[in-house]
View 1 (cartoon, one colour):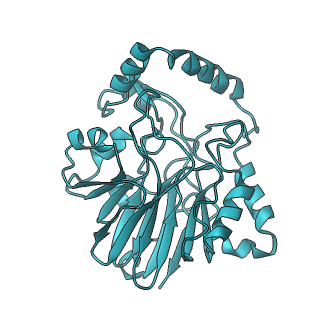
View 2 (spheres, one colour):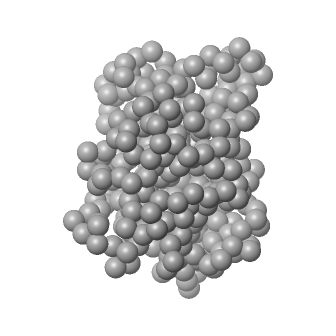
Length: 314
């Protein structure tokens, strides 16, 4: 794909959004449109289907892994730790954004998820970092099992509960909860949480999943910061590396992500938030190329490089 396809359209849309967000009425309308379940968006299915992910993960031994991660696409991962299966920021829709009657208005997926919802193993937890449309997709949540517990950043309950979920735990930075042998703790990031600009009460954050023997950092969305420097070492740091041009105040560059992974002495690094949706100006393949250059002689620590990639420790 050419490196800057449709960048003019992307930033024309951004300009209209910047204008609309000055109107409280426009933002309330956007909030209402952003609460749909996708049931009537038939034109989304009429559009050309994105190509499949090049890799298909093998889940035949999923339950046997001590520690495992599958990159389904964007910020959606399947994690295995402490005998539990955790799904992060699930987005399986081909288009994300507000509902516009029979279609969704927003960015379109450039490759299909590596797994469909029907191919997922039984879930023990859904983890939601913040309310942005590319992380909290209500049409996707509407299709997942409602009996699954949800752990989310504070202020997200109203976007989840009406879909049928009842076991919802909201966490602020510094708070934690448990799922069996797994402790889930919320940590600060340098980002923002409002879904439609005026709902600034919504939280956002990263999560550390910890057992007595392993630690995973799900970094979610963040610009560069040094707030994790005192964090104990992690086995796996899941770091966003895309959407930095020109949104450097909200997202890290690949080099910054690598540096932050070093802050937590990560044994392995799994880059996310790239190669799925075009959210910014940089070429689609640039983020993964740049983090491998940043890693240099340690590039073998970058364990998943394509959608559908899988990393395990038995």
